[in-house]
Length: 281
Image (tube, rainbow, N blue to C red):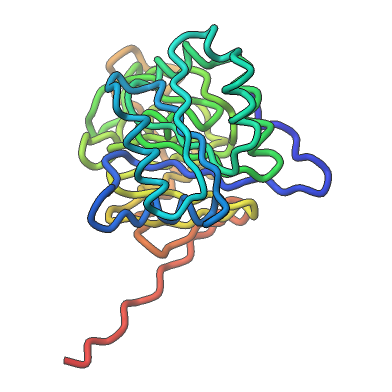
């Protein structure tokens, strides 16, 4: 599922995948910045808690976004594919300046919302400037190719991860979340061995990638992003590997990016964060 065509006189909105377990109370840096790029004091945020099994997830994010200065925040608890055709909820979505998917199970998101008016509307909204983000499962669903499930481990192996269609807001990246905490380098590399076009983004918890309309990614949060660039991949043994066998990959470029770092998807170049100020003490 490819990104929607950008409408005339518009630029694409921000795309904001979050690695899960983002800080929500003490200093919610990521969620505050999400409000800012969604319009600040004028932000109208639609929260989609479909991936979660917890009944209060939507209400919790409504409260957080309002406390962070959004003009409004409204949870749209799509629980069935029929819900995704409700005109009243689609109307709220249509007037949102930011859309946020909560965490949970990404296959629950894709099976309930994939191919529905909700998914189509969100792609069109992002193409005309609306910010769309999500945490954990809500991050995985944003790209064209979604990691549905897989196993941990540092070594890429055939069959280590399974792909499913995402919502297709971008086809530039494949996203994995809870990255360092759940040891997911191997499964991200395994997926990229199938599709060397995309850039792999491994998001630590409480860490976000703010993908701007100018194709530059800004890193924010407490952890790091493991960015895997396979544009110059020299060799992949994926075509010959049997299930469970390690995959031979050469020519991979890997970046570890922290708060303040940037990455340009056009030039494939990383920009380092500024050093912290000197401590006069």
